[in-house]
Length: 376
Image (cartoon, rainbow, N blue to C red; front, side, top):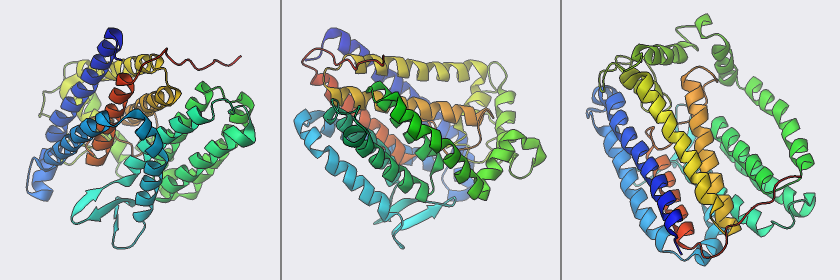
């Protein structure tokens, strides 16, 4: 049963995401039109592909919204396993394709898809499923915490193999936040997170390009034409926007100065064209997304629905935060897009499909809201 309060919050949540998607469409075209015309012969190439992802996402919303919740729960482990297998397929010669040094795409009959985006979302749903299933055993290391940790570890290793260090880190952070919310023992979390910090440092050290990104972050002007080029051009774009921006479609940095201008660094173009006012408004939308998303989660009675909704909202918000930090020079580059806004047909399709799942949760919310116990 959808109460008036839940309906209002869900409507606000959906409106916020749709505004983000529309902003994304406008600035994908604005930032990529010159590049697409020069390299691909069509100024609206990336816009058309993004619209395809949105249409497929809307179809997914309709399908997911109509599936009974008990059937969704039954299929969660199998869907997760399917996305794992699809991600493994990216390593098969002739099927997987490497772009920008990462083996993340598969092409079947000319149709390209990034399975790691589906893996990321299905993992969050599966984690919600496991937390709900093991909610009374989560304080037990062997029966509750360890099995979940093994699933997270296997998923993170698969992402690192591609390599997708940024997604692995974001997914791990989201998972540990969810485990904390689900009242896992703080000792178990500390014993896991503590050793992971030097491991992450080692992973950076062992890969020269990651180490180069960190060094460029510390001082991009040491190598302004090399490792520091991208962040310097991003800061020039943001600074050029000043208060009100240079005007939509008037960016100068998109003329082959700023790399990845329609994906990882689309925020820089938005800041250049709409200024401090536009950039602040966009950040405000993400804050509202987090607030309304958590409000929806708190109203849900089913533990699976509760944890899954929180997981999606936290994952999206963390990814947005990291992307904004990277674009403004507060973090080393990670290769993460801005959710709902950056170009990425697979990412948009999966994100929009998750909205359909949340709509299903709200529609099937028949009892008292589920409340996770807080840590003592």
